[in-house]
Image (cartoon, rainbow, N blue to C red; front, side, top):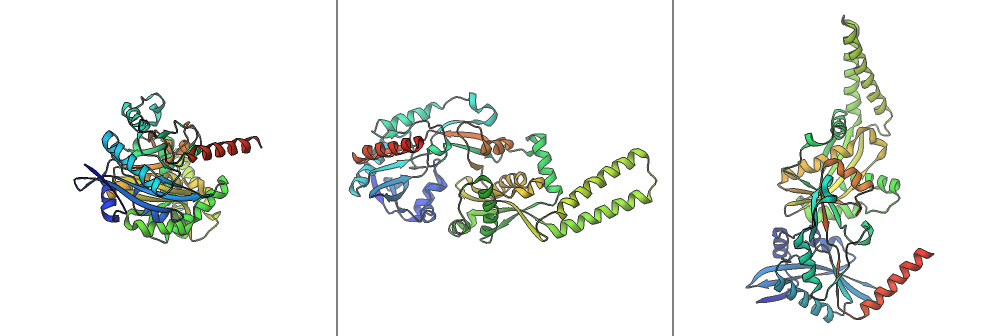
Length: 401
């Protein structure tokens, strides 16, 4: 027999979410504090005093209409039809009692999962269709297989790295050379505590200016670190410019001395001259740096949940592109995940058509692509349909205008 409860204590709730196969960072109790502009409630289903289902519901009121949103949840066994039916009925009753219009949810039900190179020809997982049918048979509205990254609240396609299977040697020679060049040119990855929020914000601002988009700022990043503490990490690709310059000058001087004091064959002289030219080019790049001490080149914020390290924000300062810091940064995500005991790294959303800037870069690391079935609306009030009609008309008028 199942029982439905609300306002579950944070500790037992998070233990369940992190241990469940469907568990996700966006369903942890602390995520409600990240989304402080929303109200929230934690709900759960128990069987014989054991938690068997959970959902963090974010609540918002827009133009007088209240609705709930369950990001990447509920966390339940979608093969258990009795459990799904009970939970959905209880959520419906809870929403009616609180006069909500509807509850939107987008569980991580995988529709397809395959390496990037073979993903287009990979089969649809049959159990995903069964899970969708289970939900729609309960009267829940399925919003279908959307075609744009921006059609849904959460991405419907994500790039995943398997920590154990990831092999830097298996990357293309071009990518390996970029990683090697970054290391040779004294770019290092440093983990930061809360002070990393300002460093990440620095490169995020550069990304915003380059792509003409709006992203979060330092206070938001700092809050995530404060909430998730050791599970959150700021990874910053940086360079000590003064030290790198000094070391490079020493190498150039030593090589110059070697060339002038030795009696080498023509082929050896040519090789030494090529190396000297390369070092002088690197020194020229360093002298052209906009800073004289520490250069902040790229950065990311990752948070762990269960066995997955979620890479939730990343930025890149394009003026340092010749140092390839973003390549080294992405490899560091896997290294950090392995050290912390995570088995997967979620690189985040990509374009639904597998084309565009997001997938173009992430594909360089041979990810697994996961496609999810998408969003569902649990309709609570008949007014839902009238409101949806009005919103759709507004979108059409905007497109025509």
